[in-house]
Length: 106
Image 1 (cartoon, rainbow, N blue to C red):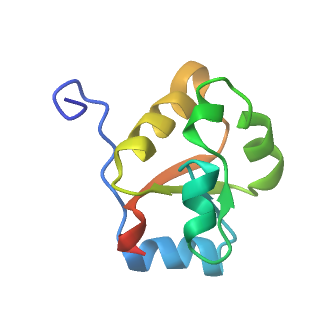
Image 2 (image 1 turned 30 degrees about the horizontal axis):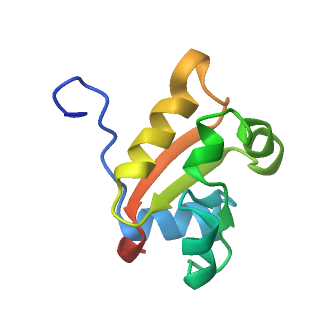
């Protein structure tokens, strides 16, 4: 559906995600719920659940924590798409926002 309405953000490659995070200092954000994050996550990621994105809770956190870019991921990529759409709404967060998609793509 997101592709049909022009809002789909294709995921970046694993290599590009590693480059952004490890070499360029991008903030790696897991948008899954805290209980999912606690069961396992990518080392170095912060947990800003989509449920909080929807209420604008962590937009300020991203503005302060991310130097210039943010790489988002979740379990399958669907919540990542929703989070990106919310972050780009109304002018966005002032950072480059990328989708890794599913956590397994790391």
